[in-house]
Length: 391
Ligand code: FAS
Image (cartoon, rainbow, N blue to C red; front, side):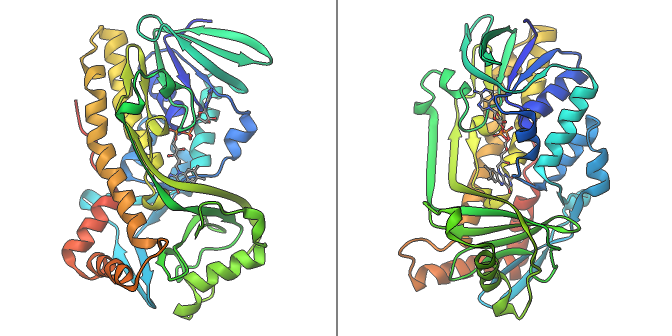
């Protein structure tokens, strides 16, 4: 099979890239190792920056988002018995919107299928040949070895994907911090009460409560790095969430059936080697962000906006100057965003061996974000997201 752009991975990065390239008249094939059912059911992110919402609207895949997305008027921070609301509307009406990543992926898959464009599930990419010339993707599908000849390959295959392995000396250009704890992510059929929604610092560890729809809550608990999901019953999970998010504030957490559970280790990771020949990385394939800042998906969208421009220039104008600049421009937004997510991780979590002194320093940052005008602006501008650099 032949195409102009081979896209590895049908996550938000790969699917959105396919949609943008299609809008510019460039053919692409998306190759995804998991089943269609698995990809559509995977619960992950859910807080969208304005730039992400605007991009999905621009490329005609925001109809359900506009119907079901929940705008964030404020962000609630609570700690030591205090709860504080930070207004979250930026200049020009910029704001955050809650809409599940699984719905974005479904909207993009359905659009691609409706347009009759190639999207191959259950197809694991094993290798990429001739990366510097006319790349060939080798993948297994239905037990048969297949090849896809391309003019360009976009590695949108996430942190554990195969693309980054084809970047020469990627390790020498990679930076990583692994936090000494994980997040236990939950999806529950329970209405999110405005009284318990937000980011919570507690001496038992972080807890987060947000909404994924009128009767669906997305909740997170800080847990040890080697946490076993089977070690807590659903009642124990709700009791722990209540202890952190509600009891000391005299509030009640709405409970309901827990419909999805996942544990994700908190790490910050950036591979600065994002282009080699006719291969480029985007999204979690080149950076992983601690979910504390709700940025991973939004960063992936920014990468794809920049990479798509570079690919269009290369394939339609034979101009590779934007491709050469893509890593630098993307990193101008990736590093500050990863730094912000790591800062949120530093402030809201309880670290092994943490002293009362450390806790008081965390309180000082929370006071600055909640009660100081400059601090509120710092918090708001970082949560609303960095502007995307322009070529
Ligand atoms: P993805 O990992 O989403 O997609 C990569 C795709 O490539 C996958 O479908 C994978 O199956 C496929 N693939 C991998 N190897 C392949 C191969 N060899 N051949 C073919 N296909 C291959 N971010 C937030 O902003 N907020 C959150 O609240 C949040 N919560 C998260 C919770 C969890 C449990 C996890 C794991 C992540 C969370 N994230 C969150 C981050 C997450 O949303 C990512 O940033 C986002 O999925 C990035 O999208 P992609 O770059 O497309 O990568």
